[in-house]
Image (cartoon, rainbow, N blue to C red):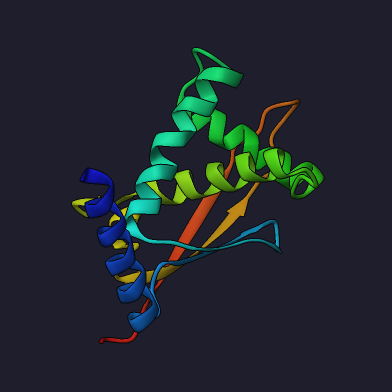
Length: 145
């Protein structure tokens, strides 16, 4: 019974996203477009649940933000992975970073059902093998239904 309600919720979210042209997230790393994702609040929740699980399997004991930044750094160095598993990990890391970034009283992830976002990731020069990922998120409102 719960599966039916979940599917109905997801269908309603997808219809609303299509009607209002929202739920699009794009990202550049350096100046290269590497992500073009379309999703709903339920799919956002899935991304937020997946990253910690991936982190725990790949790098137990590392903070989620550090893990995501390392994965994004690999995109900066080598581009998007050509294999589907690596590509999915990179996509989830970028989306997780966007969705968990603080905005006023909530996060940018709270806007996924109401707006489109673009995130520009940068990797400023650091001494030695150190790196620090920075990002800027732009929000574009969808059309009103």
